[in-house]
Length: 501
Ligand SMILES: Cc1cc2nc3c(=O)[nH]c(=O)nc-3n(C[C@H](O)[C@H](O)[C@H](O)COP(=O)(O)OP(=O)(O)OC[C@H]3O[C@@H](n4cnc5c(N)ncnc54)[C@H](O)[C@@H]3O)c2cc1C
View: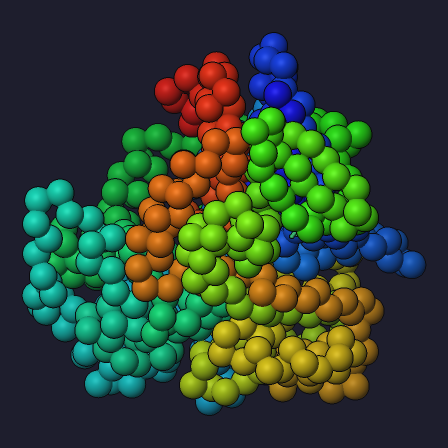
C-alpha cells in the first residue's frame, strides 16, 4: 500500500513516521510526503544562529513548546531515542506580567488560568479594581447556568469564552486576563471561541463543583496529593507545564523525518489537486507531475484541505471551509544584557485588547528556556497580529520588527537606542485555526464525511486540538484509518496503554 501525505508539519510527519513503523512491523506500506515550503516543520520552525563572539541563538519562530501532560511528543521522542533531549522550562523564573495602563503588573499568585485561588495575592494585586475582585468572588455562590442531563457533555452546552467568564467572574476578569490569555497564546477571540472545544474542563468544573474557583481549587488539591503520593524519583526529569527540546522544537520534526526516511519526503513542491478513481488516488503537484497512491492523507492547514478536498467531496470541503484561521507574526529580537536594565527573570507578558497595543504578548525566551542565547544576550519573542489586529501585518518585515522593538522599549525599558543583535520576523498567514462556537459539531460532521471516503484521511491542528501533540496524534490516526480500511491493524494500535511518560 502506498500513501501520499500532503503537508510536512508535525501532523504530516506524525503520519510519515507512523507509516515507517507500520513497515517496520512487516506490513507492505510505503509513503511519499510532499511539502509546499522549502523546509519541513510547518508552524514549527527553529532558527539556530552561531554568534560571532561565541554561543548560539536558538529561536523558535512558531510553536516554542508543547504541554507536558499530553503524551504524544514524549512517546515519539522515546521511540526515536531522543527523549533525553527534551527540556523543561526554567521555573525559578516563572513570572507573568499583564500590561495595565502601559505598566507591567505581575499576575497574582494562585491564578489558575484566569480564576483566582488565593485570597491575599488577589486582594493585594492592582491588576483588578475592588468591584472586580468582589465580582470574581461571587463565582463561589452563583448557581450553575443549567444542570446537564444524564450523558450530556460540554459539547451540548457550548458557549463562548466571553459568555462563560463574564457570567461567572465578571467583565474585568475577561478583559484583564482571560482575553489576553486566549488571544495572546492562541489568537482566539473570546466572543467567538468555543469553550467546549478549547477548554471543556471549565464547563465540566461548573457542573461538578458549581463554580470555577471551587473547581480549580479541587484540581490544585488533586495535583498536590499526586505530587506527595508520587514524589520525583532521583535523577528523574524535571516536570514543568511546558516542554521543548534542547535544540528547539524543530529538532523533533527533523528526527521524525530522518527516521521516516528523507528519501520519501519532497520539499518545495505542493499538491495542487487530488482525484480518486477505481484504482486509487492521483495527486497532481505544482510542478505538473502526478503521483499515484492507494491512499491520501491531507495534513495541510484546514483552508488548504478545503481547496484540495472540494473535487472529491464538496460537502466535506464546505464544512472544512467554515473553520476560520487567523494570521499573526512573531518578531524575535536579541539584545545585549547591558541594554536591558530591568528584571530579566520572567517568562511572559500579556497585553490585553483594552490596552490597544499592537504587541499582544512577549516571551522572554532566554529566561523561559535554558541555553536559548549566550551569556550576556537576552532573547525576546513578540507577538503581532491575530484576529484582533490583522491589519498590522500589512506592514513590511522591517517595519514590524521596528514596531516590536519600539514596543519593547516602551513596555520593558530596553534602552531606546539599543539595536538588536539578532532580529527575525516569522509570518504565519492563516496559521492558527479558530475553534469557534459549536466547533465540535462541525468536527463530528467532518469525521462522519471523512469516514465515508475510503483511502482518505485528514490530519492537522484544525480539528481536535490545536497543540503540537494533538496535531502529531492526528497524523498517526489518519494513517491508522487508511491502513485499517485496507485490513491492516498495527500492533502498536492494538496496545491499549500507550502512555509511556
Ligand atoms: C505562531 C504560532 C505559535 C504556536 N505556538 C504553539 C505552541 O507553543 N505550542 C503548541 O502546542 N502549539 C502552538 N501552535 C500551534 C502548533 O504550531 C500547531 O498545532 C502545529 O505545529 C500544527 O501542525 P500541523 O502539522 O497541523 O500544521 P502545519 O504546521 O501548519 O503544517 C501544514 C503544512 O502543510 C503545508 N501545505 C499546505 N498546503 C499544501 C499543499 N497544497 N501541498 C503541500 N503542502 C502543503 C504547509 O506548508 C505546512 O507546512 C502555534 C501556532 C502558531 C501559528
